[in-house]
Length: 172
Image 1: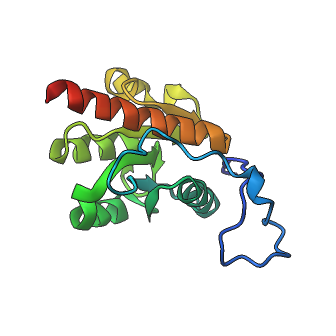
Image 2: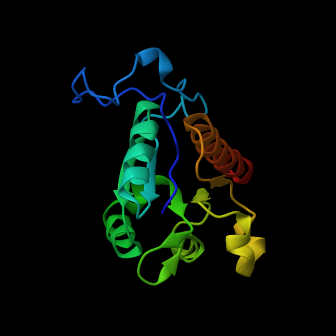
């Protein structure tokens, strides 16, 4: 059985009915991040997750915190989205175990060849040992162990984006 972030304090999307079991008060939404508040547009995150419940919950949490979200359930779908929207994608949030023939690290390496400096956040139901085959590369990015809280997810994403912006400013 796959684990997923147990985010129970997230308000339902606008289209949800008020008597839905997932609907909660808006006061339970994770506070919006401020790391990207000076951008001209919302930051766009590519989420790669094969578990539908986890993918949906991640999308809801990120959207409710001001991010644009593109979702993929496999490496093939992620690459298809990347080909069409790669220049708009500001961060990759990927599961470590991706269906078919890839891992989150392999996908990140491929995207980073095309867009150096792309921030990456990994997540997995397993510990960091899942990336032990390539520790030097893996430890350069935040890691979320599932289950995680909405706050931890937003903190990891905001941190990775802030570090990437800081590095870009240092280069320019």
